[in-house]
Image (cartoon, rainbow, N blue to C red):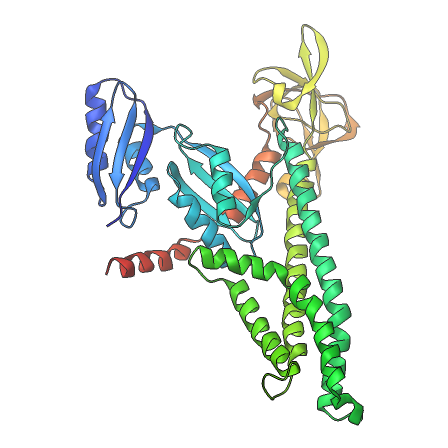
Length: 419
């Protein structure tokens, strides 16, 4: 039975009895072997069996008791994943890291959402964990804002797509003549010269770049998968193509009689790369749609301060300030119209391409104003958090969320391992 130790910073405790309450609730969880809560340091040290209880359940138990747990959320853009099993490998390695409460890796969005204790582990340690598993994390330079970080990720995704295109181009250039010549020889279209020994050497020369340049990523991913004691789709691709290639090389060298299958190994790799390129394009289109939605948000707002209009970043707008929106401009924040009238295009929120007149005392969300009407003055009700970026966040979190049924095989495997 394996044991793990987890430290949770607790908030909301006011006396030693609060610490006893948290400790008692943690010990009630199945799989928790020991729990010690120190009121002076406001920390809970829990020894538990990871096969029986998850840290997320401990956090939920503490919150159910009326207290809080200091946690942080990190989103890591992952590179190098080729199938859903790769995502499971990254997720499993992140959950093994001390201080990680929960981790969800979505293969479609290529993102890992990690909830962790900032006093135990930091973002750099999470990145190191992913890299130890054989995958990469897109990182920008220090001090970049969210928009610049998003640009870095987009650049990395474009570079990955360009890499897939180069691999496909090389694969098609060598596989197409190899496949046509091989099939023509097998069906007797070519003459007797096609059965000369040098033809097999030509096939060998055409198949080698496909095997070790186009398919090199699959060998690297297979190595990391086997090192992590798992098998993913890349292991199957590398194994299947290598068997055909190695057997054909042995036939060419005269080590055994038979037929060469260089076209088989090359066709397997080229077809898989074609599918990977189409998949990368589809995921890129989805990410571009979310990015386009983010671009609809205004970057600055015109605020009345000291009787003058001052243009400030949206993040600097405080709740209760008066924001002036001129006709044709974007409404930067959510608020209530206090003066003026103007028609507002609400299609981004409602989906209906209609313009609604916004009179005084009517709520207005962040969207675009039309050119008709006078300049309305709005009082923000939720400054610096307009509805459009929140909608993007909801969309991204929904894409990264897994169905509850996705955890069933993992639970079954845990029960099997205990047997």
